[in-house]
Image (tube, rainbow, N blue to C red; front, top):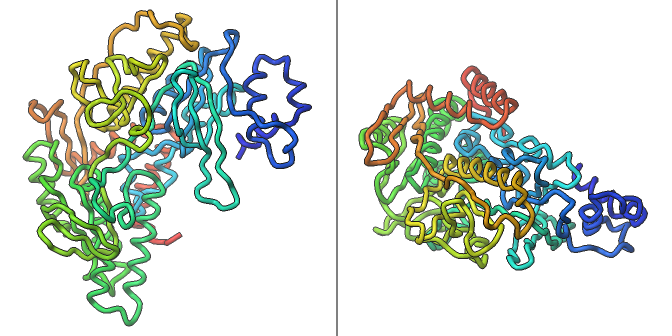
Amino acid sequence: MYRFKTLTRFASPATHRATTASKFTPTLSSLQHFATSGDAAAPPLPGLGPTKKTDKPRVVVLGSGWAGCRLMKGIDTSLYDIVCVSPRNHMVFTPLLASTCVGTLEFRSVAEPIARIQPAISREPGSFFFLADCKGVDVKNHEVHCQTMTDGLQTLDPRDFKVSYDKLVIASGAEASTFGIKGVKEHAIFLREVHHAQEIRRKLLLNLMLSDVPGVSDEEKRRLLHCVVVGGGPTGVEFSGELSDFIMRDVRQRYSHVKDYIHVTLIEANDILSSFDDRLRVYATNQLTKSGVRLVRGTVKDVQPKKIVLSDGTDVPYGLLVWSTGVGPSSFVKNVDLPKAPGGRIGIDEWLRVPTAPDIFAIGDCSGYLESTGKPTLPALAQVAEREGKYLAELLNKIGKAGGGHANSGGDMELGSPFVYKHLGSMATVGSYKALVDLRQSKEAKGLSIAGFASWFIWRSAYLTRVVSWRNRFYVAINWLTTFIFGRDISRI
């Protein structure tokens, strides 16, 4: 709200004339597009126009995920103005998102506001955050075409605007893969955003309360309280572990009338946690089974409102369906007119540049190496995105210090060493104070891999230190402590 109140200040013609002497005049006057209805007489402008040579160059970042936020955090704001365009105004600490679904953590503990990650966005006159989706990229004119987000509110009409860039960083992430299976988008819930976790929590608690109503048949109780998770990767396994803990430690005490009806099923086409060491996968399977999670090997053929159908014809009734089968290119990435890497991601070279588009870079889950580089596509992991963001921030700072920050400049500049990714290992919790830690650099490599309570302690310690701010570290630590002492909150808010 503060940002939009600030923007409307510049909609008045009188104010515009008073600021024409300022070096930021092109930026501020262009924001008349966001004028309130009371300023209807002022002609709307299309957005942020090109910067002048006397202005700081502008870096436009599309997305506020791991890659985009790490980039913005590392950008030298004395060299660049930053404009972030994203449909959310925060970064989600995804490794802990599953814990919020069952009340182990509060939602705000895993959300870090963009303005805290990069304060210049709310302080510098040439830097902004726009709550919007990018609809297209005009490579020739160095512009991105955007549309504001309204969250479906009937009282607000989406507005189209343009933002000129000197350097464009596409960090728009990916979308959950549905493999074209009918009914997934309509009936399943993905676990990628805070609002997904909120929806899962509300539906889970609603089903618990509805199943306790007099007159509900035993068959309907079993359906309502059947939580099905599709996908045996780290997210699916961690969510299943959190659910089993919630059932064993909270539901059985506070919903004693229906405690024998609730159960969890994890469906995976192959082996769970396929990237982990074989010994760890066996441990995870045994631990989940011991916790009451039913493991089913199969492929989903169809998703209906109250049941899913497997490829062998088996019907699986459900009350809550969580879909966690990996990610693929988003509709924006598919439609943008840029070269593509194998798998449909935006193609990049060793320096994370889009070779055929001057001043455009792509990082995170939306990007992949072009075949001409001879490098394999990196996995869609937070640690990959974070390190790409860090590397690109240092590269852009180097370019800016050498005078190549403005559009169409610095094309022949020596960029230095290309980006190199080194895998640090994988971790996953399986519930009951147990976790897996696999520190091998690849599935074929040798290295340390451990499981059990010690791994759970390492998992929590590592993620607590990786939470972006001290504010959220404090929230997470307090949430863990209160959950341990008092149990999980079961209020449906």
